[in-house]
Image 1 (tube, rainbow, N blue to C red):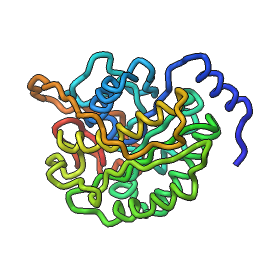
Image 2 (image 1 turned 90 degrees about the vertical axis):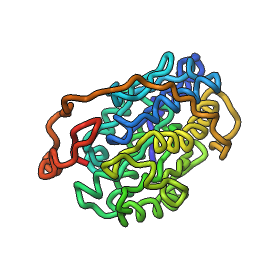
Image 3 (image 1 turned 90 degrees about the horizontal axis):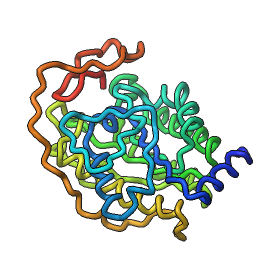
Length: 280
């Protein structure tokens, strides 16, 4: 794989100049409207790293009932209803060229399965296309790929994707651009009791579970970018998740996101939940 010398020099110069570590949280509604992002931010605060991290992306939306810790950086690239297939082929290059992330974390595939009716290998191939774009923008990018949380009906294709992820990581990780897994799968303990009533999205327990998987790996990678010695995160336990009690939220209307793409339209408005109207 050929990398741009200019991109490499720019990445090294940014780190040397003391700029914040740029982190892109990438995904679908499980990134956009779930509450695990502020929980991970709390972990960064507890690790003394929040002032050294810049969450980047063109979105700043979040679920209305989610807590917002002091200084919370809401930027991200979570897009409700979007598929890894389309992100890989139409969007990722522009996003990473614009924001030049040092670290990318992503969970994608639920919509490819339930909307796009794609198979597991198609989703893994989309991961590879995204990785190429990330490394073209920053040859030293560090990547956290999440195993996908289950649906309440235990979709077999999601389980197949999760089973393929370790091999994909082993084939693509490098010392210069390491990839690690945040295991949010049923096999690692994610249960139906952690799902919201729609059987797809997270409740508070689910958000806490995801934050526990992502937070330690993100903290280790941030330290690595800032000058740490370890090439990849360890399995260090996450700091306790501090969750301020949000005020009661009463929703009387449904917020409708931008019109979905064609491969989403047939299911549009069939999946509405307490937070968002979307196809997923």
